[in-house]
Figure 1 (tube, rainbow, N blue to C red):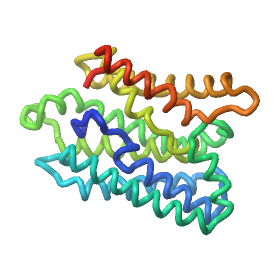
Figure 2: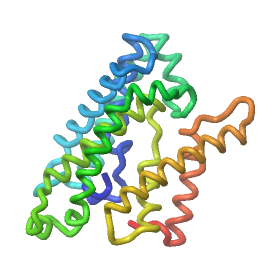
Figure 3: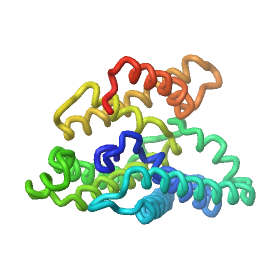
Figure 4: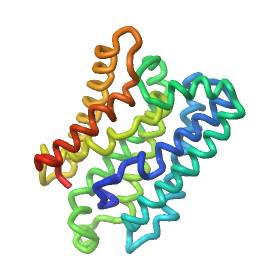
Amino acid sequence: MQTVTRNPLADPGLLGINAGAAFGVVIFIAVAGDAITLARSAAALAGATSGALAVLALGAFAGSRPHPIRLLLAGAAVSAFFLAIVRGFLLLSQQALDTYRFWVMGGLDGISLAAIGTLSPLFAAGLVLAAGAGLMLNAYVLGEDLARSLGVDIRLAYLLGLAAAVCLCSAVVTLAGPIGFVGLIAPHLAMGLVAGDERIRLLVSALLGATILLAADIAGRLLFAGTGMQAGVMVAVIGAPALVLAIRRGRVGV
């Protein structure tokens, strides 16, 4: 998302994708229960797609891609809109509220191999789309004119990247809740480690994101033995100071 929007602050949480997916899941829980099923992932996908399209429509294209600042403002507005509707549904459904209290914090508790298998088509689609977008990223970052001269379709690269984020975030939000911050910090850390090849940066970002989330989950279990602390909370507690420190020391690429 940071590469295709050319905005170092872009991530699925800021662009309305996570909020849209959360909206879809909460509506599903209120209507059909809290089981992790393919239907629940479809609800998350529908919500995430709605959020992405709304942000895209409001983001005001400048050339072949949305304007970066307007895109973030649109993302903030769409996220606030979805969260307001979610809160309204929670007031009407005690079952949804009971599940939401734990799920919204984000965590890895209760995730089974069966649940991951259920959502595997969504993960597979997201990975294929990300790989397709990744093939165009090196030319994309050179600018629209040069990318076109190299045969890259700017709009296609943007839409593939957006579709990959929608699919992957829908699957993750269905399983673990709307965990934020990982999508913001991992690419910056990857840029500090890898320079010159956006395809490798994409892969390193994925590995770093998984490592950050796993480390946060383990830290929460060790520091709060017996009760545990949700991974989504620990990511923000540990990740925010780490990102600030990395920026101050010049180890994060922007």
